[in-house]
Length: 308
Image (cartoon, rainbow, N blue to C red):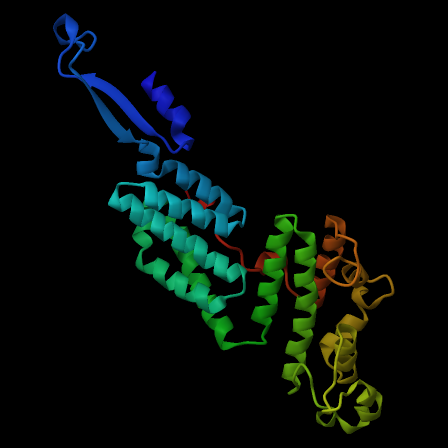
């Protein structure tokens, strides 16, 4: 009966009380003799061991809710009375915080977090003993990737990270957020192509080949820099004979019924129509084709339950 009560109360922040005594009837096997009672107080053993926090926190982590996972691990660390459990929960909180920073495009903060996790990886080996080697390998790969990203701003790596971020938002059914990231990925890929042409995202008119000056002069501001919308950006790339500009012009994205129109009409752009899954998927496929990347090649954050 006591064990059943402990299991039922495993999710609650409770204190267990047991009434014992200094003397029992029936030669010590019966009930406590009146007047000899004393109360034994014990914290919930599930809190002390951190089992429930590990289960709940990994569930939220695997679904991409890293901030929630961090709060669960932090609270468990405060509740536990065992130093080794406190340390393990602190490392798990650091893991959740690190991927939360990455998810919010704080690549430098994420890289520092991964370095801290490597120093305390024994805690993760204890939490996920079966496949901790796989988890450690992925963390090392991600640390290297972030290092390369920080060295190469305005690069293909940043575009692919935007696509991976969009996929995570879509997995959470946040299709408007996911689509906003896809739109930015298209724009960023175009800016990367301009950079390879030796041009900035807002190039000066005089930096273009002379035969393009007349066409693009109306797009120049008072400082002589071009203000380019997304379609203008790809039109310029096409005029510069860039393969990406040609690919955009022949893609579904440039057509009158382009999936981009869905984005422009969304509530996070210029309209009031929330984006549905089917709309996101249309733009997703078109963007992957334009960028020339397979979704399987995009970075995937670890799933802790798969590493148990």
